[in-house]
Image (tube, rainbow, N blue to C red; front, side, top):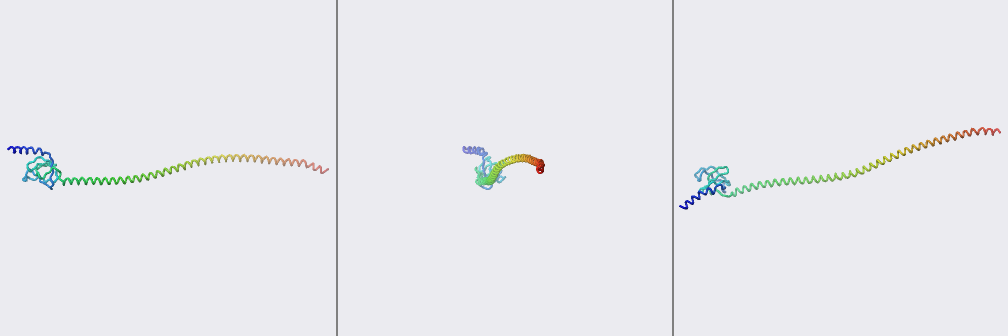
Length: 216
């Protein structure tokens, strides 16, 4: 009698202990979900291996469970286990591996694209640096040539100015020489004319005297 009472208390407490515990369909393909704890009850659904379900209560060889879609029913205890079945875990791992592999491949492709872009940028940078060096060299040459050109232009302008000044001086000197020459020419002409006139006068004066001498 005492053992019967203990057994009754145990079965009364057992549903409370098992409530909200998660179980999984064991390593078989499918099990039956029935409306009651026995094979005589109606099958409401076929549950696949690895399907998680919440334990509501347990009676003998049967356990009342609730599925994730809120459907409930009874299944045999021997088809349940507390851990995820290896096949389900393997599928999850395979799925996770595939996702990680796809992500790794995508990252690898992205990294390859970034490396190619980096190499192209490095090549472009090197080319731009060479162009900049060429431009700097050209600029320095132009600057030096510009300096030499400015000096040459300045010297040319000075030379032109000096030549113009010398030309003006030469023209003034030539004008002065021409003026002096004309003055001297005029003086020589006047002097020659005067000498000729004086000669004529002297000849005219002395001519009668010669006649007189001849008469004597």
